[in-house]
Image (tube, rainbow, N blue to C red; front, side, top):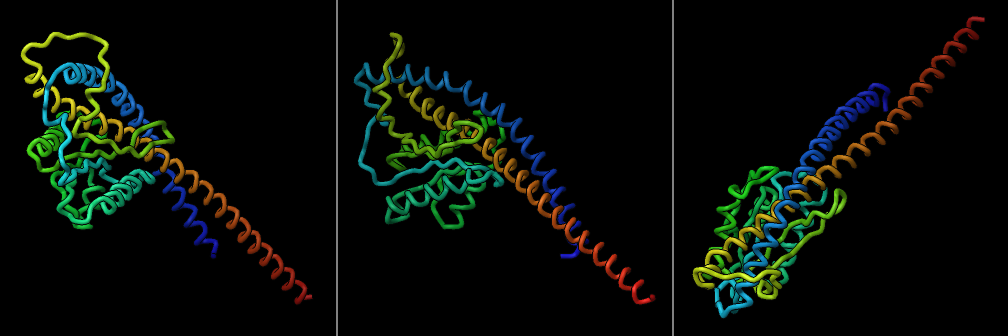
Length: 283
């Protein structure tokens, strides 16, 4: 490779490294805030789960969201990102969901998808898989108002019998270098009655009327909590991916610089040899 080509490649790699370093710093800043959002929302979910669990376990309520029914159709709620450059963040979850659907179902009529994120929407559309609802362009620090409509629709589709169970898939944030693919059965809420309440409550109006309001809110809260968790995992994955890209670029620059110096030294040696040979010829 010519010296000019090596020098051009070094310069282009340095520019790429500057971009990946900047993206790493941006993702790190977003991660800090997203992690706080996910943690601060946790106590709310725990409390509403305690209240709902107390009512469900202490009453004869027979709300449809608490009861298992024969499964004719399964819903899959999948949380992905709007863009890539986040390592295996999107591919892991999409491969898992796709493989799960292929194993569980023989017909497209047996399942339906609800998808958050452009990457997931494009993935399933390209495979001509049924998407009942989707949303893209969710903010890096999402508010509940942004996903209220899709969360409410997911609960309504279960309530009206469009599907008989709903599974949710997302990446759970563990640390800046680890996120775990999570599969969670969202509906029916068969395990909610097992929640042990730490407090006693008096209910007004009736328990059935309270559950009619609280259960959909609780399910929607689980979806929002999963999205906050997934956003933290997304920023962490992108930060790690950009850090690895920066390290790889730095390593490549070192290798190219070594090659450049060797080629330059060889060229200088060749020039000296030619000069010496020319002088010898004149003598």
